[in-house]
Image (cartoon, rainbow, N blue to C red; front, side, top):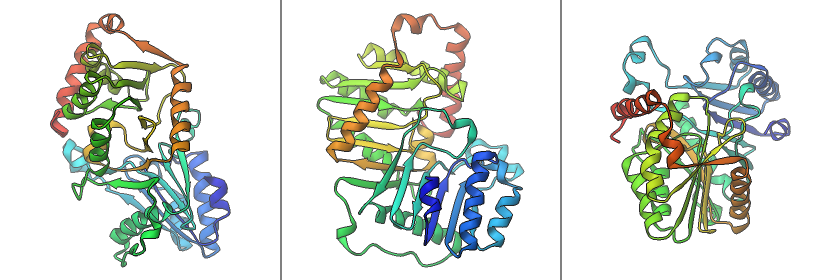
Length: 342
C-alpha cells in the first residue's frame, strides 16, 4: 500500500477506521503531506472513534495546510458518549485508491500494534476499481458538497469482482443481504473467518439450516481478540452451532483480524465486515465480492492454512468454561440488544 502511494501521480484516496498516531500512521501521513505538496490530490477520511489519537495531530494540520483533505467521520461530543445508540454510525471501511487505478480493501488498519496480526487485504486492478472510485466520489461529495462522478459505461463493471459498500445512513445493508443470499444458496461448503462473531438470529439460523441440508460449515474465530468481551460473547453462541454440526475452530497465533467467506468454490468475499451486528447494520463497511476461480482458490487455501494453526472447539471444552465467563457472555447479549434486535 505504501509503495503504491509513493508512486502516485494523480490522487490518493483513503477511507480508514484506524490511523494511529504512531510510527506507522505517521509514516503514511508524512507521505500524504509530501504528495499534497507535489499537487497530487489527497483525500483522507478516518473514523473519529477509531482514529481519535489524531484529533490534535500536527501532521493532520500540516496535511490540510498544504492542500490535502482530511476529515473525521462522525465526531462524538460529550452528550453522545452517554447514549450508546448515538455512537453510531461509524466508518469501519478500510479502502485505499491510488490514481483511480489501484485499490486495496480488507481488514488492515494503519496501526503499529496490529502489524503482526493475521489479516487479509486484497489488491485490486482492472474494471472493479471504477466501482471503488464511485464510492469515493460519493463520500467525498458528502463532505465537500461537490458533484459526484457517475459510471455510465457498463464496460467498467466486472462480473468476477464487485466492490460493495453498506451504510446504515441509507439503510442499504447491501453486504449483509449479499451474505445471507450466498449462505442460503450454498450447496457444498461454507468457510467463514472473522475477528468477531456476534450476528443476529437470522444469520445464525442460515448457517444452521445450511449444515442441516448437508453443507459443510466451518467457522474460524480468534482464541483471543483485542476485545475480550467479544470473545466471551462469541462463545455464548457456540453451543447451538456445535449441536447443529457446525465446526468451530479458534486461531491460536497472534490476533486473527481478517474477514473472509468462501462458498462452494464459486463465491467469496474479503473486506472489513465482521460477522456481527455492528458490521451488518451499524457501520459503514466495504467488501469485495469475488467470483474469480483463481482468487477463490487462493482464499480457500489461506483458510486451510489458518486451520492448521487453530484448535477445534468441542462441546466438552465449551462446558468447562468458567461460570463467570458464561454469565458475562450472556449479559453481553443483552447489551447488544440495546443496539440492535438479536
